[in-house]
Image (cartoon, helix red, strand yellow):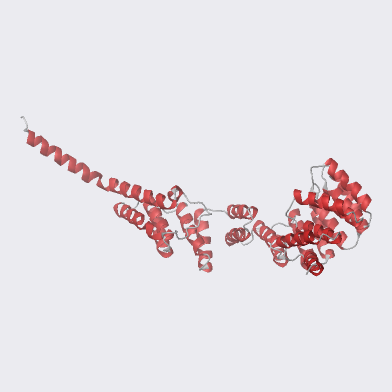
Length: 408
């Protein structure tokens, strides 16, 4: 039987409508996800729709109202497909970027029902709790502990984040990560040890000692812990005898490392036991012949004993045998200053600063030489530079006062 053209058209139209009805659901979801993702990327950058890592913080965006259209698209996609994880996560993120943290957390809890056990959703929650940490630290700490646990994030991974921040000089951020590691494992000795390092860098010696003491429970034979602990005890108490046992243990536990040995030398010097200190320096020279620091220490002791020529001879070996060392030139400058050879002292100290301009004590020493040689303007500039680097440098403060008295 032959069909008319109208019949064929009607059948084709019906099939087309059926196909559209059949595909309407996934096509609409895809459309809204694409549009929402495009708007989000245009506002916050292409990484806005990518995976999060534990370091992400979902803080409010600079223009949160610009995210409303994106949120509407993600909500529409989720309404079309109530089990679409991507739509759910991006809707939650958008709420967080708009500062709607409770809404974001509610959405992420719904995401958990879509795919129970998915470790990516707790990371989204963690990014929200990190943003809450400043305004509601107790809630944030509890939420983060649960989020890290559910995401399968280990204390070691959190400590690594802390180390990245500490290396970059972001000490408060490093402390946050170490605290998070301790929230998962209160006995994490590595976290306590690194908290001690941060406290020492902040000159909080009491805090450092407390942290090292906590670390010892799980790191009883860690030489680096003993090394840092002993120095912190000395800095906290001012009593080298109290720090000495820790340093001696560090030397025994780290026989192939030089710095525990030289730190022990510093404590012996502080106790006034110069003969023992010098003997230990000579041992260090034999034990570590490829390192300049034992020789630098020997030169320093010769200078302390009022023998600038011997000190300079030792330090000259450092200059000739090793790559340039700022400390060697600093001490050479001090030897010339003891002999009142101001031009040579200035030249050596300027060379030290050129090699390493970050040490206030070198600028302070240069200021003292300028002051002693009558170069008041140069002395003032050197003392001011030292105080810029360390406002607590008492010798620089006194030197600056002398320059003002000389030229009020």
